[in-house]
Amino acid sequence: MASWMDTVDTLRLRALRLQGARSRLFSTRLGRLHALDWEGSGPRPPILLIHGLGSCAVDYGPLMRWLRRRHRRLIAPDLPGHGHSNTPKVPLTAGRMTSALLEMMDRVVDEPMVVFGNSLGGIAAIRYAHLRPDNVLALVLASPGGAPMGWDELARFKAGFDLSTPEAAMDFTQRFLGPPQSGMKWLARGVRDRMERRGPRSLLDSVTPEVLLDPHEVRSLRPPTLIMWGDEDGVLPRSSRRFFSENLPPHGRFESLPGFGRSPYLDDLSAFGSRLQAFVDGVLKSRSENA
Image 1 (tube, rainbow, N blue to C red):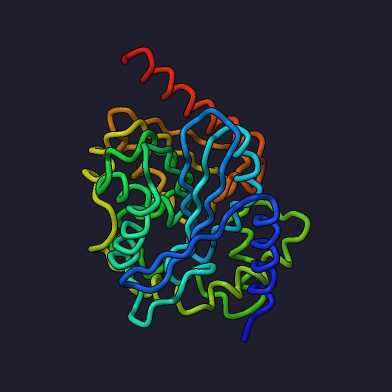
Image 2: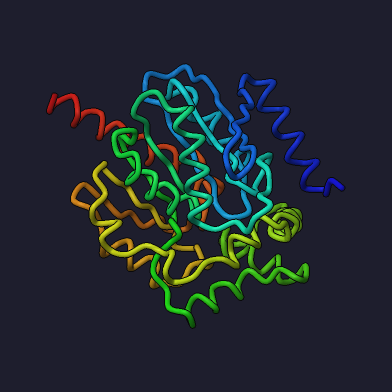
């Protein structure tokens, strides 16, 4: 039975299709995966947008509309168990998610691209950059997940995703969005609905310290990397921010975003987009000068 949030997401998907975005379906060993593939009108390289836990491709709709005037192609997959992708019959783990994403992207990507990942999408983007380094022109991460945690810290982190009451859902929503804003009650209802689904819950339950990142995985990234962290993000522990700021790759940069939450493109699209674009333009200029 479709939930209230399923209906909202379906309507948002239809709106993006009417504006020119294509829905594409791919069969993988983990089930069928869905991705938005949108031709842009800008001169910059394609950009891949990987969403976070409990999110989905259509959440990037406003950002995609902003970017399509600047990039020639935009790709936003729904991770397994999220959005319009199938929920696997087997438990969803980080390894299975990465394998399925790789299986799909090998059929989508035909040139180097900018890869953006937020939250869970951050660790997915990092591992994609290691597995397919020649496909990644630049890496942009917003409050990426995956920093090392011991069992006790991980248990506290998982407890923060207990959205069993409307009050808990509101508290969580404020922790990732920052200060209260209009419509937050409805956002909290949507967050609770999504996080109760089997895909996100299975993935969260499967996380152990062994599947998280180690310093070498971040330090050894080859592409130019920008890591942005909203100061108002209250979902990840402060140790996660320190891990990424202290383990930058050779061509990496860390930027603090005062007044922004966990998903900065939701707080101020123009300001966030301008930061992203300035970084991409710098990477392209450097490549041109060194060619």
